[in-house]
Image (tube, rainbow, N blue to C red; front, side, top):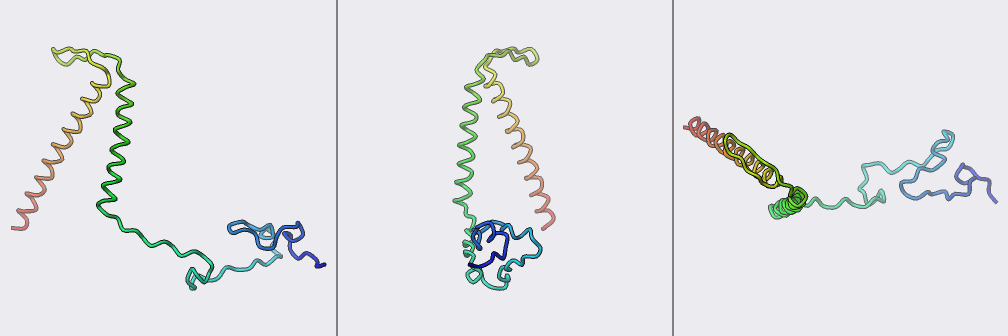
Length: 136
């Protein structure tokens, strides 16, 4: 029978802990732990799995992500509309109307999106004209 040399052997644990586990002997400065292979060796030699190949980004992948996001937003919008069906009175200048709260908020959101698109399109057209003038 051999004399235990490390704290982990003394406690009855195996000498080689599972990958990622910190052995108890790591806290003892008198115990020298084996060093991993140096990074100059390829991952296969170091016993590590090879990293997966980088998958390129494609337009189809981007379209799928955009479609999934749009579907999620549509579901959230439907839930919002169903939960806010209480009627509310809206007054603007001399006009007054009663409409469900969700519809009023949806109209306001669509109006702000349209305003943003119109202003953004005007700015892009302005910058394109400026670039054409600078080229000529």
